[in-house]
Image (cartoon, rainbow, N blue to C red; front, side, top):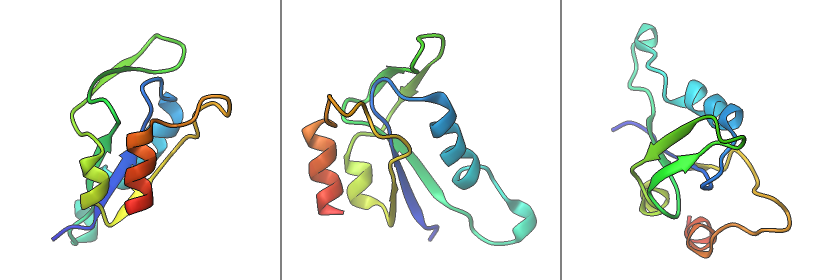
Length: 96
């Protein structure tokens, strides 16, 4: 079974930081001859999310249950310091 990775993003994610995590862990690497990572991008509220700046968006299918199933959890950006992460995300990270 592949190593399971959950990448946690807020509703107004930064495209660069999400892209780095996806590039590093989700891009297929068949040349290595090994099973690569099973990556899930997740959020507290699955559905449409907008990148900061509003020019790009993404549909995020997985909720915080992906954190519970993960072997590794990546939080590629800290949300604004004056606005804490959603309680569901914090609780799932604590469980992890």
